Amino acid sequence: MNKEKISIVVLAAGKGSRMKSSKAKVLHAISGKAMLYHIIKTAQEISNDITVVIGHQKEEVKEVMESYFDSINFLIQDTKKYPGTGGAMKNIVPKNEKVLVLNGDMPLITADALRGFVDTDADIVMSIFDLKDSNGYGRVIIEDGEVQRIVEQKDASELELKVTTVNAGIYAFSLSVIKKYIPHLSNANAQKEYYLTDVIALAKEDSLVISPLLVNEESFKGVNSKRDLADCEVIMQNKIKNRWMDKGVVMQLPSSIYIEESVIFEGECTVENSCKITGNTLIKNSHIKSNSVIENSIIKNSDIGPLAHIRPFSDIQDSHIGNFVEVKKSSLSGVKAGHLSYIGDAEIDKGTNIGAGVITCNYDGIYKHKTSIGKNVFIGSDSQLIAPLKIEDDVMIAAGTTLTSGKVPKGSLIKNQIEVRTIKNFYYKYFTHN
Image 1 (spheres, helix red, strand yellow):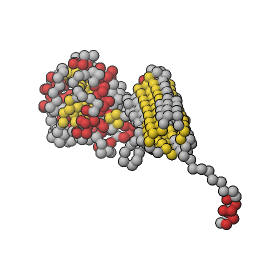
Image 2 (cartoon, rainbow, N blue to C red; image 1 turned 45 degrees about the horizontal axis):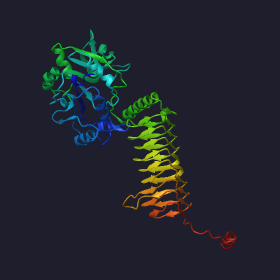
Image 3 (cartoon, rainbow, N blue to C red; image 1 turned 90 degrees about the horizontal axis):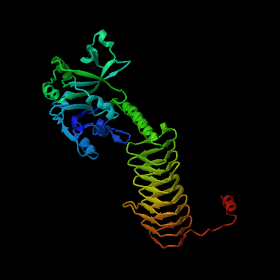
Image 4 (cartoon, one colour; image 1 turned 30 degrees about the vertical axis):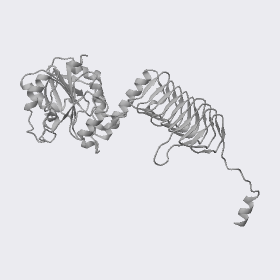
C-alpha cells in the first residue's frame, strides 16, 4: 500500500472517566504497551502522516508515545473550547488526500481491517457493525448501498429501532470534506459538543457519496471501562500466542500463559502452563517450565523453572535454572543453578554449579555491587557471597560458607564453617532441670 495515499488522525484527547482511574485512558496497558501504542503501530503500516490529538494529561501521553515513535505529529487540542469528536478535528492539517480518523481506545485494530477504508473513491467511508442487539446504539440507515443518515436511539421511530446496523465510530474522509465541513460544525446541542457525526448530515445535504463499510466487531472493539480492558487483553493475548504457535512455539495450556507484545521467540521453544513473559525478552531454543516469570531478558539454549523468576536485564545461555531460583541483572553462560538460589548483579562462567540456598549479597543498603564467578566453580549449599567479589576459575566453596568481599584465587578451597561441638546427654539434662 502507498503510505502517501492516506493521512491518519488518532483522537486521544479524552479523559475516559468510566475507567475510574487517574491515568489517561489511552495510556492503560494491553499486553505490556499502552492502548495508544498499539493503534499508532498499526497506523504506521499504512500511513506516513499520523497526527495524534491529545488533551487530557497531554504531556504524559506525548512523553510515553515519543519513547516509542519519532515521526508522529501531536496536536494539543483545547478540549474546553472545542469539546467532542468534531472539536478534536479542529486545526487538523493532513498532507494526504484521504484522512482516516481513528479512536485512541481501539487497541485491537489491524492494518488489514483499515485497508477497506482506503480502497474506495467515496467522499466518506463510514464503519458499521451489524449487531443482534443494537439497543443503546445510534442506528445507521442505509439505502441503495449508501448511508442516508444516523439516528440516535432516542430519536428513532419504531421501524428504525428494528435496524441492527450501528455506527462503529471510524471514518475515512476525502481531504476536501475535512476542509469544508469541520470549520462549520456547531455545538448547538444538549451536550454543547462538536460531533464528527454531524459531518455525515452536512455531506448528505450536499449529495456526497457516503459508503458504509461493515467491519469486524472484535477488531474495532473500544475500551471504555476496566472490564472492556480485560476483554481486550484476552483477545490480544490469544492473537499473540496464536501467532507464535503458528511459527512453531509449543505452548501447554496457552490460556494460562501471558506473553507481552514485545517478546520474541526463535528456534525450538516450549512454554509450559502458567508462565508470564514480559518486556523485550528474547527466548531462543529454550524450555520455559510451568509457573516461571521472565522479564526483559535473554534466554538461549536453556531450561528455566519450574517456578523460576528471571528479572530484568538477565542474559542466560546454555544454562539450567531450576525451581525457586531468582536471577536479576546477571549474565550466566553454561551454569547450573538447580534450586532455591538468588543470583543478582553477577557474571558466572561455564561449568559453574550453584548449590541450593546460595545467594549473592549484592546490596549494601545504598549501592548494588557485582559478583564475578569464573569457570568450573563449585559453590556449596547455603553459601553467602558478599559483593563486590571476584571468584577465579576452578574454585570450591564449601557448604555454609560466608564469603566476604575480595578476590578468591584460582584453584582454591574456601570454607569458614563453625566447628561442630557435641555435648552429650544435653537433651535429657535440659528437660530434667526445666
